[in-house]
Length: 111
Length: 114
Image (cartoon, rainbow over the protein chains, first blue to last red):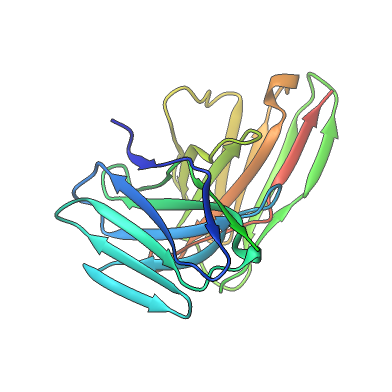
C-alpha cells in the first residue's frame, strides 16, 4: 500500500461547480495534512493545512479530515479556470518524520 | 507565507561533473528540510530528510554517495549531485519546515545533464 494515495484524474468540472479532491493515507499516527497546488513546471504552493478532525474553511477552499478513516479531502467551491492545476496531498508522517506526497490529481475547470 | 529560496533555478552541466543546489529559509529557522525530485508528469518523490547538524536520512533507492546533503545551519541546506549523468536530469525541489510542520517550498532547480 502506498503511503499516500490520490486518484490521478483528470477531474473535469464546469466553471462555478464544486471540485472534490480526495486522499487516503496509511500511517495512522500522522498528525499534519496539507494540500498543495502545482502548475506545470512550477514548485508546489501551499493551499491549506489541517491538523484536527472535521472541516477547515479558507475562502473557496474547505479541507476535510477524518483520521478514523485515514481520509483527507479538499473541496473547491465556485471553481475557476485558473484553478486548473495538479493538486497534491501531503502527509507529515510521524513514522520516519517525513513529508510524503501523493501522486497528485489533475483538475481541469472548463469555462 | 514563509519564504524559501532555492538557487540556482536552472543549471546545465556536463556529464561527470558535480552540481550544488542551495536551499535557504529566509525568514524562519527550518528544523527540517526535505529534498524532492520530480520527473515530468510525475509526483514529487522524497529523496532525503535533513535535520540541522545531523546526517540526512535517505529514502530507499536514493544513493547517499551520489546525492550529498549538508544541513549546516537552521537556514541552509545544500544538495550536491556528484558525477551527474543524463538520467539525473530532473526538477529538484527543497522544502523547509519550521515550528508547525507547515512546509514551504523553494522555487525548484531544473537540472539538465548533457
